[in-house]
Length: 209
Ligand code: URA
Image 1: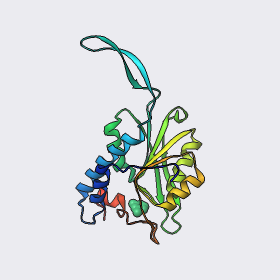
Image 2: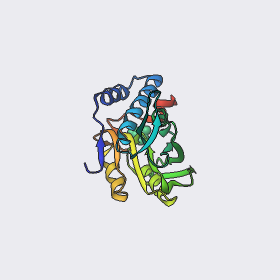
Image 3: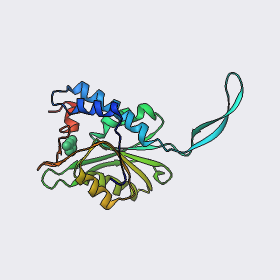
Image 4: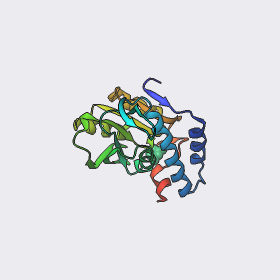
């Protein structure tokens, strides 16, 4: 699918299967999500630009690569983005973090914003939106709309599982936002949950059900 990278690394696929199991504990779901997030982060940052700097090792002077440009922004969609955020910050600890509070209206499945806080200079940074479940795509579209309104121009999205409908909705509205995911699942049930999916990612990682 255009604009979508399915991270088919065996470790990612194995860990996702463990997470899908309904009897996975809150602790293990959260730990696995953090581990998978690290691996997804590795892939979504694979093509970041480098620049060369002069350094001194204990033995000699040399030219060596470092990341170019401003620090990344991870845009955490509350509340379940938090599970991915921890793993991504493990790998990129200097990243800036935006928080976007959006909940799904259970009747319409539309996204309703209740919080937004982001760095001022989004236009100068790569922004990576993180949300474990790309289901209807409404939340992702609302988050990207808002980030663009605030000046973001380079935006990517990382999720654990995507539904084909969510990808279609996101790319219908924002074809310039590529997606990295561990899996594209079959579809959605009547309540907008991904099938086979992992269930409610927020409830599973925080033990709220
Ligand atoms: N949100 C979730 O947590 N799970 C889904 O399957 C869909 C949306």
